[in-house]
Length: 149
Image 1: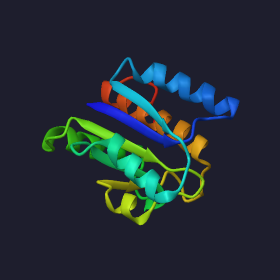
Image 2: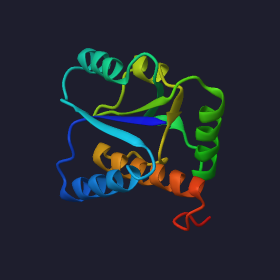
Image 3: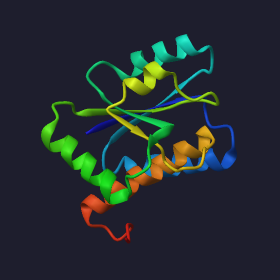
């Protein structure tokens, strides 16, 4: 599986930069992953850029406060296993919006519309939290002791 993480804006906060770098380093031992930063701007342009970078063949996880909150780590691992077994795509794009969130068009394009928490998260923190959960999924899959239910 190849992952493409697409964020609006680069992490400016030091903790977010460090967390992003750490989890990307860990994840690259398990899977192929790219991080793409888009420059913040007007919504129609951002939606078009998100579509372009994600690509047509990629499955899409859109992180949005209106998304599903019922998936825990094991539930997300089950979703990923199902994707790997039953879907033709070998790429997943994760779309993380900026301060204004996503457009309805972007939310509607999601194969999985996901909220990381019932709280609204700042986009830099959402990036770190998602990368940690993705790393947790791969260690769970590998039977490594990182994940403890």
